[in-house]
Amino acid sequence: MRNLYSILFCFLTFSSFACVCNPQTITEKYIQSDFVGIVTITKIYPNQKNSDSYRADIKINELFKGVKLKSIYVRGRSDRDLGSSCDIFIPANTKLVAYAYKNDKGFYEVGMCSGLLYLNKKQVKPNPELEILNKFKSEKINFTDKTLYHETSNSSLELLKYKGIQLNKSYGIYEITFASNLEIKEVKEISGFGNPVDEELIAVLMNTKWSSKSSSGVKNEVSENTKFIIGFYYYEAEKENGNFISEFYHY
Image (cartoon, rainbow, N blue to C red; front, side, top):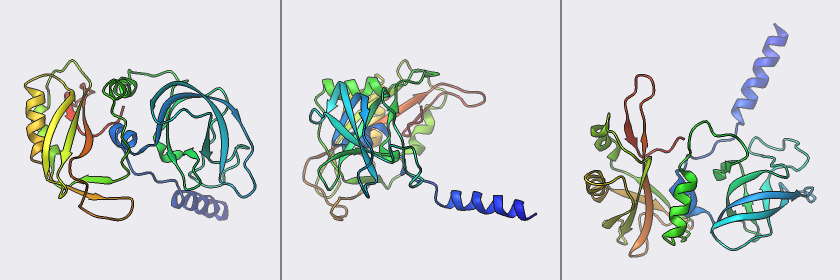
């Protein structure tokens, strides 16, 4: 019984301190990142004294956003020791899509909550993330905005009418232009599903309401003509669930 209590205590302790990341879509993590690229880790270095990140040299295979870097920092330990539940270890020769942010020391850093996409692993089904990133690159969408946006209306209810729909594309990407008070001035298609679905989704977005919080703490106020990118994702039927469109990305 004592062993059972010890195991339960350890489990609860570990669960209590499990790393918690706010869910992000591709569009959100792309906009908020200072650097996005397909990179290969070529060399890693030991953590400096009292540092919770280690340096990793990289080879850039394709740059989507930001400046060309020779190295990034990985939040974790190079000796694979677990400093915290949010620590990660990325070994040399790993190929991945790195979403990095510039920390207060001026270094570009990735971590558990960066939304990294590892490319060495075999994908069970096609992942549209690389296609979306290439679309951003071709459209020269490379701005960075640390503001957090939250839809206060419930547009997901409008998507219920698409249950069972047949589409030939797995995503649609749209650009919202805000007035300074977060009223929507314009919505345009960047890469859509095709009409009439695109026209209907643009109409839905035009009627949405939003709140915001900037990195400096300013709420519900942005610069006039601020841009925001949003995606809708198409999923084919699995088991008893029919085809549907969702604003949530979970490939």
